[in-house]
Image 1: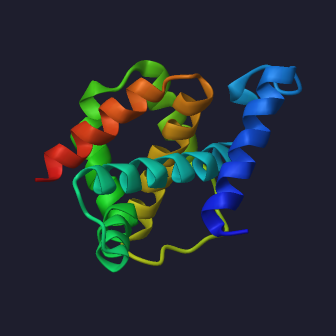
Image 2 (image 1 turned 90 degrees about the vertical axis):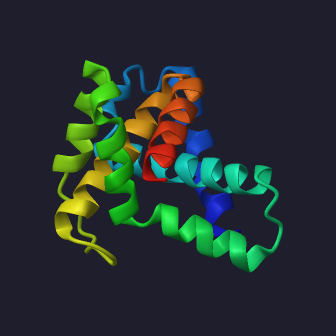
Length: 147
């Protein structure tokens, strides 16, 4: 199973647990679990957007997607969209940003890594809330703001 397939499988398990009532409130899900889910959603959106732009060479797709997926870039995207966020979205962002992770930032600063984790947590929350339209709106707005 590839990393993306594992992330999709985890996403489906979480979504199923919400549907079956095992988890009745998204706030019960740990922030880092939401970030894990949000990371998968974000990566899927990025890859889809790049393919829709007509890119087809896998090496180029991978380099472009990796650039957008790095913590410093996600932190910049968050700064672009921050003023557009609702109170709930900001709340889930802050939960993720403040969560204590055992991971160390591979690229960028600790603060950029924390902002990126908060951003991914917010995306996980939106996904589980059925707000895929909002995720697309925010990601597209953020990426456009980088140009």
